[in-house]
Each structure stands twice: as C-alpha cells, then as structure tokens.
Length: 333
Ligand code: PMV
Image 1 (tube, rainbow, N blue to C red):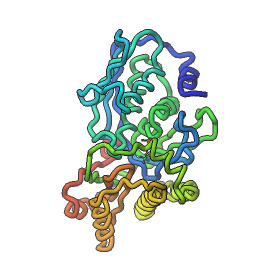
Image 2: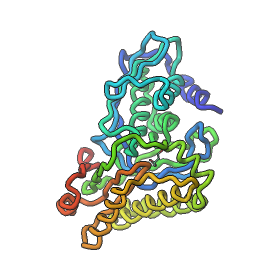
Image 3: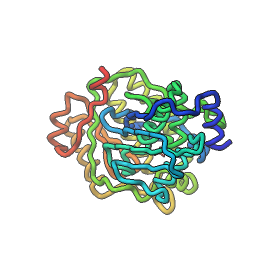
Image 4: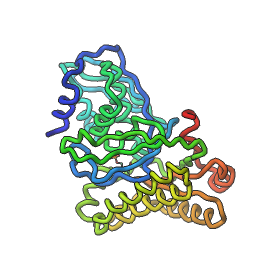
C-alpha cells in the first residue's frame, strides 16, 4: 500500500472541505536520545527499531495553511519561497498532494526558529506542524496517535513532535504502519536541561533518508544496531522512571556514539562530524573527569546537544558560554 492510500484510508470518514479560513499550528522540534536510523519500509517511513526523544518546547515550527486556487502549492519557509523543484520543495509538495481533495492547492507559510536541515530535527517539527495545521483547517479532531501516524508519513521523526516532554515512537509490526506511532512518556523532569551547541548551521550534504539507505546497504556494524537500541531503550525508560540522571546521560551518549560508529563503518563512510565536534566531545569528557556531570548527544549533523541537570547549569555554562539553554519542562510543570 502506498502513502496516499493509507492517508485516504485514515481520513475516509472525515470532511474534505476546509472549515476554517486558515489552519494554524505549532509543533516542537525533538532531539532523539535513542536514535531512529533505518527503515523497514522507505515509502511509509516505518522504522526498524523504536526510538525515544525529548521535545524542546520553545524551538520548532509554526505552520499556517490556506486554500488557494492556483495550480501549484506555494510554500514559504521563513518568508522565503521554496522552489517546487528543490529536494525540500519536492518532498513538501508530495506530502501536501496527499491531502489535496479537490482542484485547489495550498498556500503554506512555515516559520522555523532553528536552522533547517542541519541535524537539529527541523523536518520533525515542520511535518508535525503541517499535520496539526491541516487538522485545524479541516477541523478533523483526529486523536494524537492518528496525528502521529500522519506526521510520520512526512518525516519519520515528526511522529514524536506531536507531543511535549519525553516521547517514545513504537516500532509496530503492521505492514500499513497503523501501530507505528509515538506516545508521550509520563516522566516530567523539571531540572533536566539541554544545551544546544551550534557549530555549523548550514544544511547537511547527505539527508537522513539517503544516509539511512546507504547505512543499511553497506555498514559493517548495522546488524548490531537494533540490539543496541533494544538494550538502550530499557535502560533509558528505567532511568526516566527513577530520575537516574547518570544512567540516562550514559545511555544517551553511548547510543549517539554507537550510531555514529555505525555510520562511519558504512562504505563510502558517512561522517556528520566537523573537527569542532570532536573538540566539544573532548571538553564534555574532560568536564566529567572534573566532576561536572554532563553528557552529549549528536544527530545527523555536526552540532552537539548537551544534557545536564539544573544544579550543574552554572558550571556547564562557564565551560560552554555559547550554548543555548533549553529547559524542556519549564512550561509544563
Ligand atoms: O526523521 P528523519 O528522516 O529526519 O530522521 C531522523 C534521524 C535522526 O535525527 C538522526 C535520529 C532521530 O531519531 O531523530
């Protein structure tokens, strides 16, 4: 079954006439603590493993969608028109086409407050906000699991951006992917902090989509990756339940390092690192040796996200004065 058939099946009994003049919604970006890498179905973004993330409430995408009578969709990201021929534009168009129920097209304005395609999970918040905005435009009142499935069809990790806090994306087994969606983990942690260290905000040269396919085909270490994720998920959930920061940080950092080792073992190798990335990693390890408890995670880009608790904020800030501090639970608790 293809993406469009599944979307039509899900929206079967829903109204296909816009109710609101404009659909509007915000979705947060999310940072994976246990990474998703590898699809069992490339068209439906069905993963090989479950994954787990933290949403960053102040960072993300706001989408506004109105109906237009032009032939083509018009899409603006941060007020810049996206060419329908660019890879980004093609992907957004394909997604919007699946929600086109008549001769009309969409005018879409997306505002993102993080660098786009730089390994800061911009696609996760963009596709999640688009689905939430369509839900608002048509007043579908879809439940969050369905919204998560639809967001996943835009970009895998977007299924986690439907929620705030810690979130798990369940791998599922259904070939149509109707059981592959995210749910929130009830584990608010007011003292938990994330420090964004942006080394390079330019778009990555290899997309996650291409990187995953290449890793699956050629990485000598990939066979071990699903086993590592299974163990890491158990440890992470235990750490969140018990607010065990040492276990949480170690599990997240080790998962990120294993992820990048798996990519490095592909051929030709995939490296999302820059020299400064290694420099930052060594500084984190040096801090730990000096008793400042902090860890890092890294996605498909050179930037690091530091993980620490509020009682270490001053020490971490003294070492990394350029980082942007996010308190994921500040607004929730
Ligand atoms: O959802 P995608 O296709 O942008 O892939 C996300 C991949 C990682 O960010 C590296 C890991 C993850 O789980 O978010």
